[in-house]
Image 1 (cartoon, helix red, strand yellow):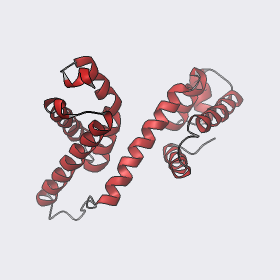
Image 2 (tube, rainbow, N blue to C red):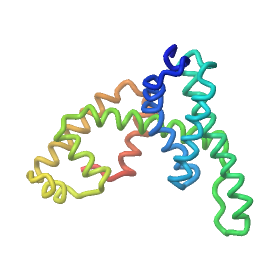
Image 3 (cartoon, rainbow, N blue to C red):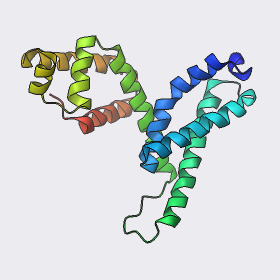
Amino acid sequence: MIQFKNGGEPAFKAIFDLFNKRLLYLATTIVHDEAMAADIVQDAFVKLWNRRESFNDMMAVKAFLYLCVKNSCRNEYKHNKVVEKYLSRQEEPIESPIMMAKIIEAEVLNNLYNAIEKLPVACREVVLLSYFEGMSNQEVAKQLNISINTVKTQKLRALRNLRMFLKDLSPGLVILVTEILQKLRHPI
């Protein structure tokens, strides 16, 4: 934290790398516009940089970034609500329970992506193609030039490893991870 407070760019980059993806996910799920979400997150990091001397620990940085993104998204929402008041489809208002659920989902997704990065390369490739690219077992087998049985085996290994990597999460978060994987693609 001392390097960050003193304007150390490597320390700031480490903080950026740690929080950027989850903040982008949070903002995108709220404003439904990737470019706008990127601007909101970038603005939050600029504010963090300008106020870096006032932070003493990583929890304060994390709270500040989430608060900045939440408030900017709320302001953007209010602006859009005025602009689009005559459109038939209104977005759901951003309330505390909804915001908290989106923050939790962003954190869980971050844990899931970190766990996927720990998988062996073959398992990771199968998981990414199956669950994130939406390919069938047959398409994955053809893409990777392996048998369908190998695809199924790699999926099972990946799911076992993911359960092991994510075992320290609370049972509720494990259920949320499972639901997220099912949203991405039905398993095996």
